[in-house]
Image (cartoon, rainbow, N blue to C red; front, top):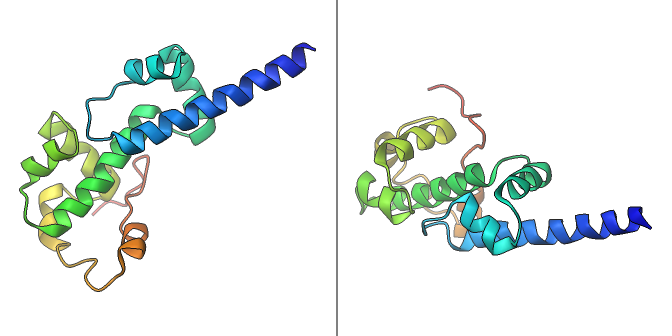
Length: 144
């Protein structure tokens, strides 16, 4: 009986974690933190972080930053916003943290990316451009 309850609880946790991930995808530009996400999922911040990492292989904060960097890459390729404007448009409150994380994921600083990749997705359908230009997660970008 307890195995069944544990299994049902695990399924409920997975569903809650998926809702958290969906919220991050929708509200990446909002001021989100693990505590707020956990309150919305009716669980502790520690439990949310452990379960999120178990299911998706990275922390909720890392996932949020990856979403923000993906959106920043798109805005930087457009070329009509400065790096600072892009930083704040994607929900980052610190230009230094944004630039550091961008460089870790993409392999080049945002200013260099903006300059060198403004035409990177020209002529590619948007559905493919998103896939081709997606950043590498967890500091896997090759050194420049």
